[in-house]
Length: 443
Image 1 (tube, rainbow, N blue to C red):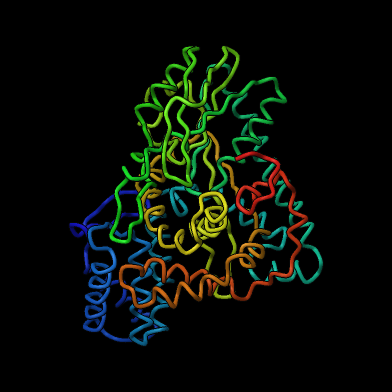
Image 2 (tube, rainbow, N blue to C red; image 1 turned 180 degrees about the vertical axis):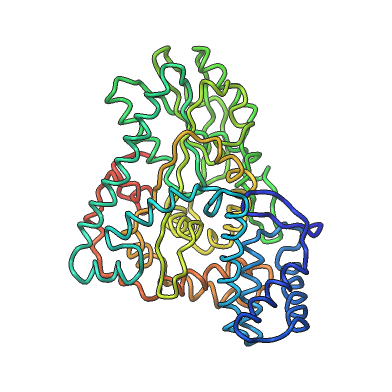
């Protein structure tokens, strides 16, 4: 671990304290009448050693450490304690939330939004793996697709209405969110809603502002870290934003994801006086990304897969794991990346989210949930066969423990899920088509 630090869920970098790990392990063991503090200390040393080996020169997240604790406990034969540890950490989180007087969910998302998602899922019988299996068995899967699409469309309409309520002062709409949350489709759909109300929109493609791939930091495996805001030409973005809002014509770059090369001055673009500029950007909330535009002229929309899907053990699918599955498919056909390459690269994605996206969620004007519970049978059908290979390949590779643990977690979660569904019923204008292909929209 770099300089003995970790990244918290709110994006803060704080000192690592082994005693906190030892205490958490001890309390988890004590809750089931297990081992004493001496064994907890020994295991905490093993956790620290594993983290140092797996994240040499990097800063692990709290999620990374908790995954390692669970893995070390199981490897040492403490399966029941591993389960108790997960429960203990969850309870401690809730205690802290109550103590500070504000109930918040993971990644700075307000608890009320999570409750609304869970309530909707329960009402439609898709809050669990067992529930989705029943829907498939009863021939109700097409109805679930329709219901999910309608809910999402309603949220996009509500977002458009909120923009209208902000008045004519809005010149830039920022659609932000973590990787594979569905920003591009949401941008298009909200644009359709505003166009119906007489608002003309013009989108700027921020992906074209990536620097050449060779300019990004590269690790020992030859993988490039292009998930940070600094992977984009922020100065040129701000220059073009300022010029466009002043009514000038610019020529934006063109980035080829297959070659990793950028060409300057390619796409001519201008913004008329009656147009609003749309910006779909992973790091749209990052303050430097739009520093040339006054805050009073911005509308910030945030997208996240706020899924509330649990298994028989009451473990919930992590939002980041859901988005990983989406990206594994999309990268394979749109960016010429093999699915396992996306899996091993994902630790860059998650760390960047925690440092450069999550801390800024409090500034958003509207939040859209892009999770579609009907996705999971399709995602499993397309990707499940990759995870046994990933587990076998990375199990004993200390540098790839993030990929191994994530693959094992996803595989175990999705294993009981049925996949006998017909994806032909998924609409061609669906957000999910952004990832599996066959969309009416051009991405």
